[in-house]
Length: 188
Image (cartoon, rainbow, N blue to C red):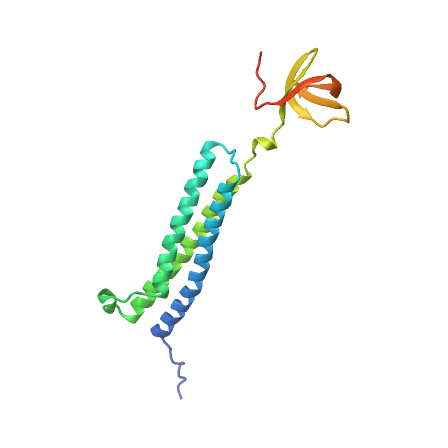
């Protein structure tokens, strides 16, 4: 008696192809959600006042457009895998070749989808750049005795405190002639 080895079962290309197409249809829904997310991030980013440096705004814009481009290409690849348009060129391919091509389209589309998400995350991260609202509030404080320009600090009731050149000036509110916000304190 000889021991017989179990029969080798080859993968069924039509079954594999059906599974790939089903998977691609599921991923297609994810990609549409990613496209919506990219649009939402673009809309939210354009609503507020933007005080970021110009180079950062340009970089964020390039990243948003790159993300959109990647997501669109990914959507086309996955849609082609999910719902192929059969033409004369595809009739010449064997079932195994079609499984390979469909799998490659699906993998490429998934990778591009993740790259699109990374690009939009980097673009929206630019909104965390410190704005002038996060820096000291500079003011020009004038009294009858003179004026000082510096950072407005928290004060006790009835006083105004300004820090300039490493010194703190505490002025009673009644002595203040004017108090104006300024972007920069001039020298001299």
